[in-house]
Image (cartoon, rainbow, N blue to C red; front, side, top):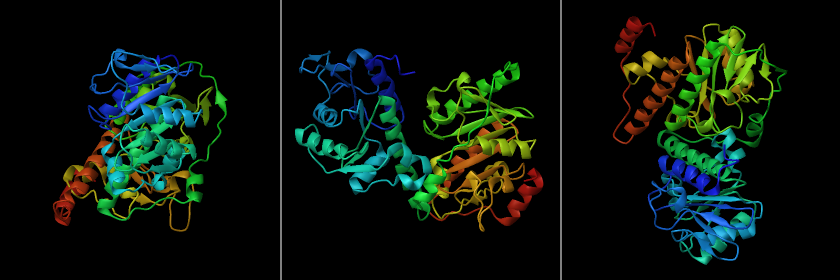
Length: 429
């Protein structure tokens, strides 16, 4: 999508995502792109970030000449310093997501090892000491940290700066670190946080190679399902149930085929044609399915009544997955009716690793146990349709959010055993 976008349009697209996701304020944050001719395109100073248009973006030529109807961002000095330090950097994002600012003012760094893919996206997070905003000194301090090889830097008592080979790349680092920060804050409310070791991180990077096939045609039913899946993926992203680079949806088409989200593609911009058809264990030629594709194959093969599988990373329910706290669905009737019991499996179960004290997902997930929480990774939700699976995902996240919030006002009191018995009798839970 971004290959042929003008730098002005690209900056507008990403600043809109940042602002709409609550990662900066009307006056806060700035983005820039280094053009091939050495000029810098940057957001303006003192203009509403919630209503920027392409004409608002300012261009600074290599000779210092400024082109635009506004002044450039007051943080231009540190953008220049970073570009001068690292020629591989072509885009910079600076923002103030509340969760990351919380870490900045506590002078701590979120641990990206809390979930597997975050460390892969962000790399090691650097830390820049405080300096006056807009000053040359701030530029020197930040540039020095990036010069040490970091691509993500937390600014003491300030915010976050991320870089990349393109603006979308820098944004994905910002979004991923913000997710880690939000997840850590929530998990700390309910229990003790656990992080992954190097061996566990490596386990998540295993890829499965599939043979390819050329689809002869795509049935009308498949086209309907592709459209429905994309609609729910976009909704899931907008509701922060997944990030741009995390989350896998799949849906059965026939007894031996299903469609699944691709690997490494931004969820916000996915289209029907991006989805990958899997048939008889082979993938649609020229496409790369999610790394979890073999798990989907195994579940569909084992459980004929399961027609949809969602792997998501909603921060509230996942807070129970990265901490030692146990999620109890017996808090409100809807939660228990829709979700039943949600077992938490040891890390690695989703990759087929089976130890003495752990079960593989295929051993436990079923029509009666449609949801499992995977330690330090994800929530896996199944159902007889995409909509049923998505409803279960939302209910799990909203229930977890209520439980975590209740910690601020008192003890969590679950529904009594008598009432649970009534629910089980009335709804067949």
